[in-house]
Length: 207
Image: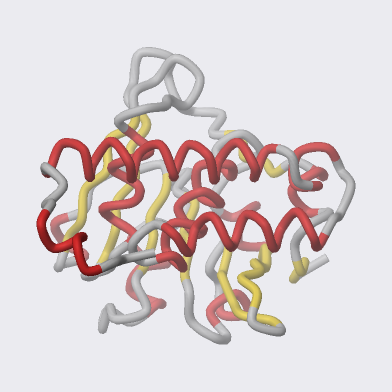
């Protein structure tokens, strides 16, 4: 709780960053305890994860960042070489970028370092393993799908209807909770494999 004396102390920026990283790590640890990993759906645990993420700035996107990191454990990029870094591209301005950068500085995908970069223009994006499209992006989804067709890129979006229109994974809100849908046709077109464990916690499109 903030009291009258709180204004006398300003937390140094490095301490703020350390606190944020610790909270993200705590969110990830709690996330690991959910049914997403062990196959047991537990709304109470998921609610706890949401509460932790709310502590971090931009709570919605801290949770989405945690989801995206966990996706890497349940999606197979068959053509990715062991020596390559794991690239996450973000199209459009979004708080997700900062949260993913914090995660990338503390974890890896297997033995691969994670690089996170935000872009304003689709033409600036080269190969990447995950492409997150911000809801504020004005780039037509079809243009994105055309560019990354059969390139082993997991396209993740957050707009209503984008799952049906061809995104591999689309975030949506259900009863004030963040959920995701998986388009199996889009995943197959991208040349990716997806674990049945992930599908157990998704709304599956294109069965």
